Length: 562
Image 1 (cartoon, rainbow, N blue to C red):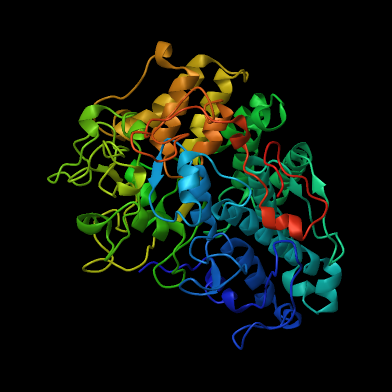
Image 2 (image 1 turned 180 degrees about the horizontal axis):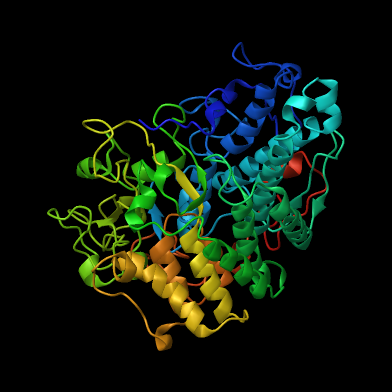
């Protein structure tokens, strides 16, 4: 059983008395129950500070103060549904050409599938509140970790060497959260550690948030620990490079700025440093011992003992599998409420699309990324003559990209475990290769041959050819290298990794010009083929509940306030 040594406080920090009555309230200093510490006591020791930093990280992994799925961090939200990576999966995957989610219609999952959500759709709000909750955790840590506070508490000498890095990491997590607010919701309230407690923050523009993220993260490129020198589970300068590359790549879509040269340069720094080299086998990135995978730049550590909940990789594993599949993914049970759309399947060679009972890891496939489970499943995500409600898990292929097993293909326990021990890869180097290639095609100062080399490196690894093995080559030539190819290659490489909606928006393919199963549908009989939708869906609305607590908010365009 893998233990999260590097973030050892993550399992115990859930007892900290940190509560938000709404996403923008400040820290409540009263204990919630007998397990929790008073705020005033948390900062009496160096371990207390480390615990709060772990909470900043852990708020993206855990979903409550107790597990599994108990004592939720944010009141009024379904604790299981609202875990960060799970809530982001809904928005980034279930609204796109990749995933059909059948369950959770009362939460609004069908609104995502049909692309007809509104400002009162519950499932839209979970990422929003999670992001602001984490922002406020980071603000609290930064407010309490000044030199003055450390000296007053007699901890300065003990923490003076490490605290600058701790603070830089908290600032990075906060910058990441604001980048996601910028991506998903556009504008939003802005709050940092300098604001007086109790202040209702003003809403700022999308460009303001964008400028803040790039300014803050640029500064962090010199303030965080050097590449490859931090503890496992904590970020270093490479994470800042990656975040900047992603934000700059989306700058034109978000705020109308051409920053592809910067996107390329920061991606290139990751590639050239070779501190986080591509894994020798694509499948190793998504296993229970992926803590040994060098490719992952930023991970969210999980194991089946200390981080048990219904979010994270536990959700992805269980949602995308069911029944007979459990023995192939190392779980004792699963849910079977999500499957892949035919558009994703068709991005792979037909010979690679189906599951072979005699080749359960896909060793005989050309592209090892085509990890679908097809027995007793139809490729179509619908039943002819029936409405969406009549469809089942078997309508649409399942996905076994994620496996709660080890590189030697062993289960963690006989019969499978109840919870996942797969660390979630937030940032990884393959994405940097593809961002660099895309940036070049969009005008960055490098040759097409360099972009082609980047793409073919990814495809060599996928096909286990070239430097990665003796498989059939998957290389493309220059005439095949187009932006459309890059978009599809990103889906092949990164499906279910929380980036697809962002990619489709950047390529102007999310609302119009490209359709998929159930897009723009009402779920009625025969209405399973996609159609264009209103451009307002390029952004999610600010949750309607926020307007009852913050009078300074303006809703995103074309989402009428109620």
